[in-house]
Amino acid sequence: MNRQKLKRRILWGLAIGFILVNVVAFFHAYKFTHFADTEGKITESPDKLSVIDKIEPLLFGINNPRPENRMKPTQLFETVKLQSNKSIGCWHIKADSAKGTIILFHGYAGDKSKMLDKSDEFLKQSYNTFLVDFMGSGESEGNQTTIGFKEAEEVKTAFDYLSRNGEKHIYLFGTSQGAVAILKALYDYPLSPKGIILESPFGSMYQTTCARFTAMKVPSFPMAGLLVFWGGFQNDFWAFGHNPTDYATRVKCPTLLLYGEQDKNVSRQEIDDIYKNLTGKKELITYPLAGHENFLKQYKRAWIRDTQHFLQTIGK
Image (cartoon, rainbow, N blue to C red; front, side, top):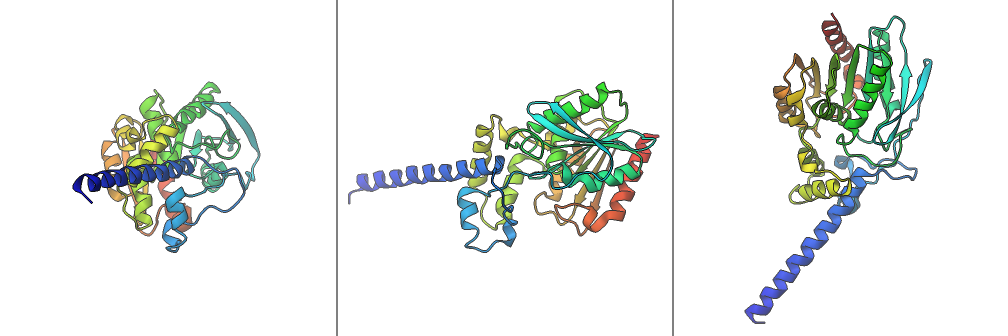
């Protein structure tokens, strides 16, 4: 075989490889940002999968069933439908002699029923709660998620609804994706919440995507970058610009930032960078044995103490 033929074969091989890698990334990105309508269990955490079981999600992405509300509030509540970029479903629960209203936003592949335990604790502290299903989840429209990017408009919609109905003391609470959506909403819109509580927001879309590959113990390059590119392309936004670390620079209200030190999805560096950029009164509290999880599981007493102290301090 002469050198010219060998060169052509190498170029063809590289071209075919490039196309195949992008096809895999395209499927992966779609599964990551679109929930399946079929019933079934969410794929286990990548670090719990065997080598063989990792092959399918590595090639085609994790198939996440559409999140549905499996529980309802035990208290009297009002179901509220709001029109944002999508129609979103909400629950409004009122406390006696309320000090204000806390809007709760769930994480990725979650729904508002997953926030009921935290809502219960805020109600005990005499705050109304307003629980929101992001688009693609629960009682909201569609099956799409943009990991906090377009959900920021839904944060604004919920905030504006309460403002129009006379609530002057509005607080925002978000976990993971919900925390990211809050940061982006405060970056994009002139909202003035009395305070915000953020649990484990990621630093950038690229960083959180890389973390998924790291959890599966496979190299993140070049697939993470391709996944971010195709995910943004499919959902009509520039995903490389989805950076909560930058969004934090416009947060002027008091902020409580909570983080689990064993978190494999969000690094301590990401949290420190976000905290550094917050411009208002701020506090960072970490829980040594917690990961990317519901902090009420291991640190219920500490979580109640920390959130209560924050709300009492800024409520004076």
